Figure 1 (tube, rainbow, N blue to C red):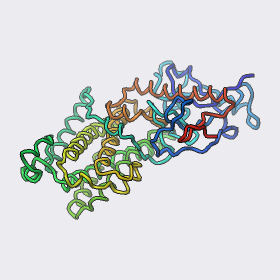
Figure 2: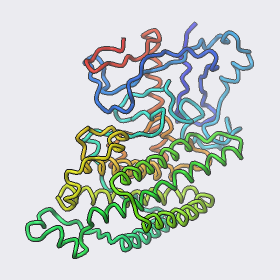
Figure 3: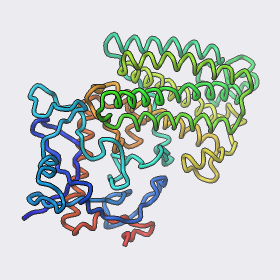
Figure 4: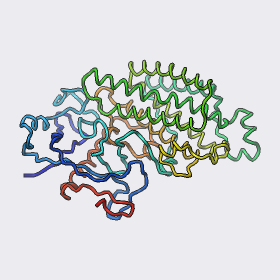
Length: 437
């Protein structure tokens, strides 16, 4: 009598009527436990015998597929083996007219859990706590300015509106998109460039960034709250969207707190923040009620501009055009949040913020391409590697489905490994390459 693992495979590539999830009642889960490495650390965990440079512990649930678990009723066991829908709408299993959506009601569909683990590499496991991103130096430098070509009237309207908002704010903050090369300092000075309104000073950069970040934290909270309330009203699950949106809001708030550690705003900037949040919050709430897809596309397009702005700022600091920040020590809050090196400077902070904005660009473009009513969030359990998020505008719906399939394959590989090794799971090597013991 064979045994099979009860991992809930988080993917589908077939009609949902043929899809089944193998589950185990929670009371009978047998979890392999071990000491987890900190998910804050981005340092590699080398091991000659282990094929993955970074890994987390594997937890496996095992049950006999042919025997009703002790203490459970035959009816309960039969229910766990029934076909389930791949969409957020209940009661659609087996409907031939229902197209397979992205994700299924399975393992990790509502977010990451300490019992989940995926190898690091092309896929980065989602944290089981508040979103606290960490990057290697190479991952910070890979971020590029990329733009998604608009498709259809809706996208073109969003792009046109964002362009108008961008130009208005550039004028208001005195920002010029002109990229001044470092060689310009051979014939002029930073002071002269600032007097000619061709270059922002450190205080002007902070004014612009603080105002932007105070607004950037609104969409994730509004979207998460709207989907939370909708889940309550509809009496059905959300599919992992809420967590990702709230993580985005928290991440943007940490950006704001980081820059506030450098400069505390005066009454004028505080007034602008208050007015901006009121106006933008109301506008975005109305947009999300009418068209969540357009709202996510709007946020993603704004993030494209944010990546462009931070890339410009990084260039100016590297070129010596913002001398006040050349050797400015990174705020303590930034070192803790991004796990920066003890000697990190302002340039490292700007690169980390830019990488975060690239992630928001990627996630929101991807969510905008999904069916808002029935698709699961493909990033609930894991997200693409920083190299992907930093160089690609996002996933199409088909690419999201393929990404979720890849997650499922990793889970199946871990399931097979657990069978071979008697539920020992994948050991996590320590810094010297030894197993976890």
